[in-house]
Image 1 (cartoon, rainbow, N blue to C red):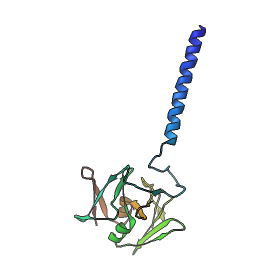
Image 2: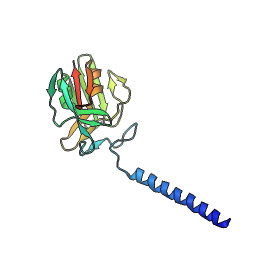
Image 3: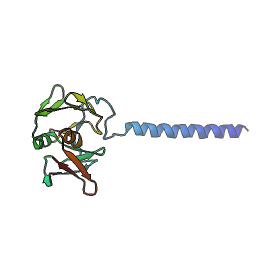
Image 4: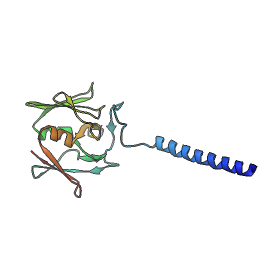
Length: 170
């Protein structure tokens, strides 16, 4: 009877230690995604391409090149804000102190924070984005969600998953 209790104790202890090691490994694992909600410090990425797929952009039937290339992160095509907003005919500014990006054209103002999963369209918060905007350090460019910005500007996006191409129609 004493042997069974010792054996049971060792099995439970061994399982607990194994789960503890797995939990510890999971919390020490460097994940490419920030936690949901506000991100502190702002999300800065050295190389978004190391664990993600490069995406492509097609605008009104023509290939659109951006520098750097768009990247698929957490199921969302993230594109350089400068190239995107210029293509949409929007003026934009980046406030380094607030880490906020504002893009506007007649009747439309988009606001993004590098610390939040939500953006604002004409002062109203949007549904959470799949990925927070981020700065890619090599190019020092801000990346934003293509779908979020394009649909707010009144255009449509269709995704060709086989070719990893976002097709935008204005």
